[in-house]
Length: 157
Image (cartoon, rainbow, N blue to C red; front, side):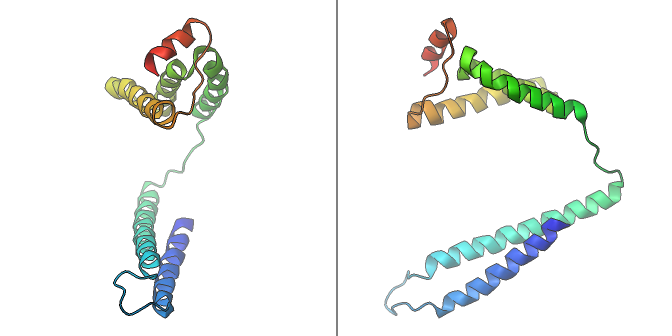
């Protein structure tokens, strides 16, 4: 319900500000002037606000049809919390390249993912993308681990 109000405010604000861009003075000879960028952003904001409104209305209709309220899943909560707490020291000792796919695998399993190919592919692709982006492309070092785990990480980046 809150998203419906927010989306309406976003839509109205983007329409008002789009109208306000016509008061910006620009040279008559310029095809792309100082109003172009704000208008592009405001049209995008309007579109995203409209999408949010449609999604919120759809969710509201779906929730009212189900009539079963959301329940707190303590097992998932505590599982996520424990895995997050264990991930930090795991990075130090076994390194990013080994700890991250194991961590993502366990999080996905606790979250309810049961397709084996997704449970294997998601952690591997996610780790590969982050490894390519940070250590390789941006040259930001990730934890390498200790001992032979450190040597394994040198094989990857």
